[in-house]
Image (tube, rainbow, N blue to C red):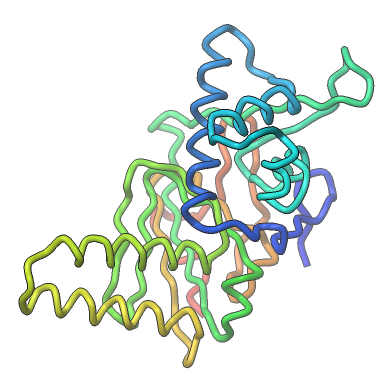
Length: 246
């Protein structure tokens, strides 16, 4: 099994957070980081940023926030592949972090992942960073989640749950009829896939190449991750080629 940067294994079982709350946390972290970075600081103190994020999210304090994420804020940041953390040389025992900057378009490396799902446990135990430019397809039911301009990090289970939730919300706002019925049918199919009653594939395409999956993601075989300060990318030689065609 693979190890994360620095040799510390990522424990994705800690991601016991709903897809809605995870999206709020990632969005708020981006907003807080961008706001502080505009003041000229690229590396930010972990503890102070945690306090700011918890306040923005409406938690009473950092303790309540850490209860909600089932662990410390510092450990939570360790799970995020687009975040780099290091000891603060100015304050003993403290840490600081930064978010990897996005690559320029000329640095993009189009990538396609194929995840072969055979057991629902894969969906709970595997996590994936979906970039702003990434689309996700489930050919088994001819379903696609198009790029939405937002970064999202979560378990595969919650990625599908989020798509199911959004599709259901869309259907509820539609007038009754054949189109609504077909959408509800797709919702039922997505819901069933969460239990993996039969093997199916999830195809993830990213023209930028900055979506990221850990090597231990079951059913996915990828080369050694490239995690440079300028980007997080897994290179697929020859353009948008399958990383795993087996």
